[in-house]
Amino acid sequence: MAINLEKGQRVAVELPKFTVGLGWDENNTDTGADFDLDASAFILGENGKILADEYFVFYNNLASPDGAVEHTGDNLTGAGTGDDESINIDLSKIDPRATEIIFVVTIHKCEERRQNFGQVRNAFIRIYNTANQEEILRYDLDEDFSVETAVEFGRLYKRGGQWKFEAIGTGMKGGLAEYLKKYN
Image (tube, rainbow, N blue to C red; front, top):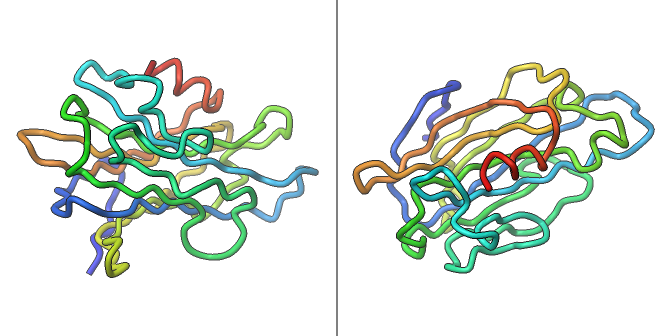
């Protein structure tokens, strides 16, 4: 049975291999353009910065060089139910310098299309066993992000040799560029 997390709650992740699923729906608001949300993963070292550019995994760099983090591809519409984008994780392959993996969702061309997370609903992040599809944990973002164009959904972090997941749910205005500044 899956654990439903509250914002800020942390839980140990026991599996070395799993999938992080991220999902969302757009509100019935017509902005004159389609919504294209993108999931990204930032693999950080102890200094809180990306290990190297190749450790920023997103739609234009689908896998980390160590093979531990693999984005399954860009969903341009978010249509349908369930996960809109997924990232496969294999902690047995992770670079030993890695201490944290941040999961962010941004709105592509947010300024040009005048879109923000206030126009998005039913956003979630979940971790499930890739082998049998069993959901391990889930965090439903229930805040109204009225001006934010990017949201840090959650993070995996290593403490004392053990990996844990923390439900974050923190928004930022400025999109993906602001996260790149923060973690580069």
